[in-house]
Structure formats: C-alpha cells, structure tokens
Length: 242
Image 1 (tube, one colour):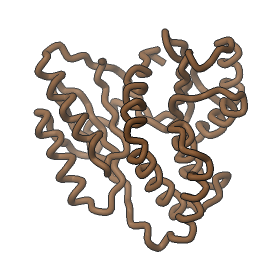
Image 2: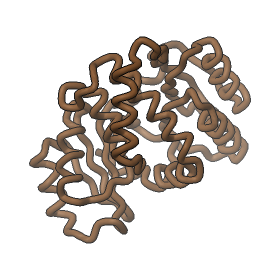
Image 3: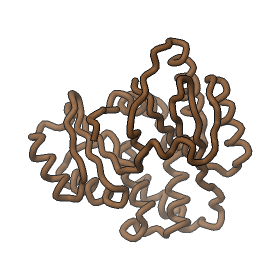
C-alpha cells in the first residue's frame, strides 16, 4: 500500500461521533436490520452482519446493544424497508467522492446528496464515474497510543490471520485485507486484546489529490460536513490528500 495514513481524519470523525454517539448507533442499527433481513441473524453465516458487528464494536457499541439489535431485527424483518444506494461525483479541484447511503426514501436522499454537492461547488456524476479510482478493501486502524506491544509481532499476527498488507505510520498501524477476510483478521486482533479505532470494509483511493486553493478546501469541507450531518449517509470516501 501507499502508506498514506488517514488515521488523523478517522480519529477526527470518531471524535465527532463520540459527541453524537446516539446518531452513529442509530446508523449502525439500520445496517444491522438490513443485514439480518438479507442473510439471517447468525453472524457466523452472514458476512454482511459480521462486518456490521465489527464496525459496531470499533465504535464502542456495547455487546448487549448489538445483540438486542440483532434479535429485534430477526423478529421484525418484514418491516425493514431500508435499501443501500451509492452516489458518485466530483468536488472542487476534481476530487472524487463516493457516498454510501441507507435509506427508506431514495428521492429524499438523492435530493439531499445532490444539494450537498451543489453547495460545495461540486457535481453528481453517473454510476461508476469515480469508483474505478478506488479499491474495495477491509481496513483496520490501530492507534499506537492504545497498543504497547511490538509492531513486528502485530504484523505477524494479522498476516497469519489473512491480512494482505500491514503498514506502520507515525501514529497508527494500518491493516489491509480482502473484504471477505476482514472478519477473521478483526477477530484475531480482538482475541489478542488490541483495541481498534476502526474495522470496516472501505474504499481506498489508488491515488490522492491535493487541493492548493483555500476556496476549494472550504467548499469541499462544506460538502463533507453536509453529508456527515445527513442521517441517511452511512459513509463518504474521497481521494482528497488532506
């Protein structure tokens, strides 16, 4: 991998989420409901549910809350009307943006996402217009301050568990996996008693683009803030080199 760490950005987002824990728990609750509807309540036989549970744990959602969410979803599958939608487009300076949403009203979500792009001087594109610039991977981030072990030992642990790449940054360790190998590697890290900042399937840019104009940075940040505030938006990926 490029070794281009996004830990600072992830940490910033996590801190924002910590200030609004109820919102992130609601978002993950939706994902649990959809995952259970699609593949059943057994984490061992439902990859999507396992990925959501990993995300929930990385966001410090209590185990009993996760279990209650799964049980509730299992008994209420007929009433789950959410569906996944993805939008792609460009921000200022040609920055590629992918927006994943989970919604019960696609018209509302499409209007909100389009508005966020427009207000930041960007534009929505067609499906596939920027996704080819990203690789879909499992990604685990570990804060060095929360891990006092040896980096080489951690590397061997995750590689033995199926990780495809491991990199050490100034303030973090980044572990990359194929999407279907994420849960096995996440469990190996968890079993080793190591706290994770994040553990999820994500879209990793093949190359990063810097913005030199202050106005472009301001407009892009406006788009990202508007998307972050939208309850339907699950994740936003960009190739912005911050």
